[in-house]
Image (tube, rainbow, N blue to C red):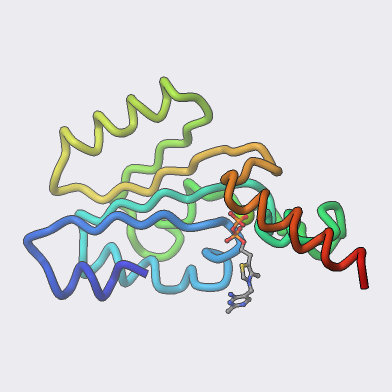
Length: 138
Ligand SMILES: Cc1ncc(C[n+]2csc(CCOP(=O)(O)OP(=O)(O)O)c2C)c(N)n1
Ligand SMILES: [Mg+2]
């Protein structure tokens, strides 16, 4: 996470983009992050599972799904009650959240970004298609 980055450069503001699946594996660090780096900004990319794995194989397999957490409640549950926790699902909502982040440079933010389940970068889609083609040949 950006705990190390924040500790090494306390005059800066670390920004972390992390998937919902990855954060469920590492969430215990979040309380410490906001305790030691109160101005940290985290974008939680919520797409209800392992989208990178869905793109590669078996998009609808049950093991790609993760349980939806009440994400905006997570920082407080881990001991960081002062963190702002907006949830955004539109470009306008994102712009508003970014404006708030800029307006409050000393505050912590945990921004839950709602994304469509299969939304993925073009590079990943092209790579996954190639892997699928190679797999089908063998
Ligand atoms: C500790 C650990 N366990 C499992 C993996 C395998 N792994 C790589 S990517 C991934 C899914 C990531 O899902 P998410 O963070 O929700 O990102 P998304 O693709 O949905 O944006 C997993 C399980 C890993 N890298 N590290
Ligand atoms: Mg995910």
